[in-house]
Length: 421
Image (cartoon, rainbow, N blue to C red):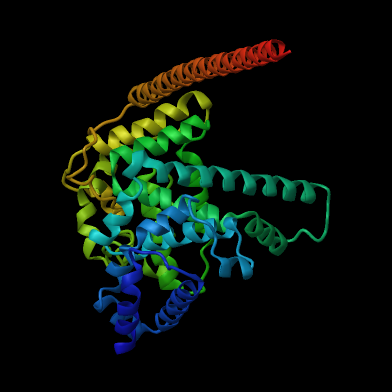
């Protein structure tokens, strides 16, 4: 068990500084490879948590976020191994998704969430850009597969389709949708407004995010066992409910269990906490869902209604207050989004008019910034031109003075020669 602690102590100095040379860089990579190998054992994982390894790793979010934003280059060793910038992007998405799903509620998970708020939501912008790009890639691949099926190509079986969609980036798309769902689930109204604004700027709605998560929910297999499948699907159902899904996708209970007493909320549906102890924290939000949130965030299929419906989700989530859980909502306990954090500075409601007003204000501010920049550039251009003209005049004046001096010298020399003759 002392090996894990020793690895963490050696890695600690590099949390806040980058390696100075290629040897140090390779040394750090080897240390992380050794640490990852150690974490394959349950016993060493417990030792890692007890040694506050999770807290230590989250302290290194700053360089990781720089990599997520595309501000750092792929290391020389990674390039030698064939890793591209696109693969780094996909790995960053996978790591962030794992952090949200694996970290318990508390300072570590809050630190990850806060990264999407700082610097005017720049990481939200990056996340939504990645989601839109991969959504389009997967949609193009799906249309191509549909055309192949329509043409009657016999080799296009289900296995071929799944492989083609994975190559197009479906896994990264699903992980990006999970991060969006987790950020929405946190309840920060500023982040929710930003997500809606970015979706509406691309003529999209939360329906696309829900569709990706629903596909992911339905595609979870039994690799980890029936209990693990139900746990993962329970988490996704909670996300889908928070995002406004009205359809009940809970699997039907077996006929033999019809007379069994009602069970408490599924273990693991309180997202990313790994236990059922946090489920009580979502009672008030569950009651809000039962009291009308679902009706308020109903998404219409026509383009005229989707924007208002998505913004109504924000309004309903922020305006509803805690209320006793009615009997009709007893079956909704698996969807327990927590109430918005007490330290949020956002207003409790956000209508579509507020979103549009905020967007209009942002556009006007961008126009003003652009005008100011153009004026500064124009003023600088005029100053540079005047400076160049002054310099040119000085050069001409100096040249005339030298020419005049040369002519005077030459006349004086001629005069002296004439006198000598």
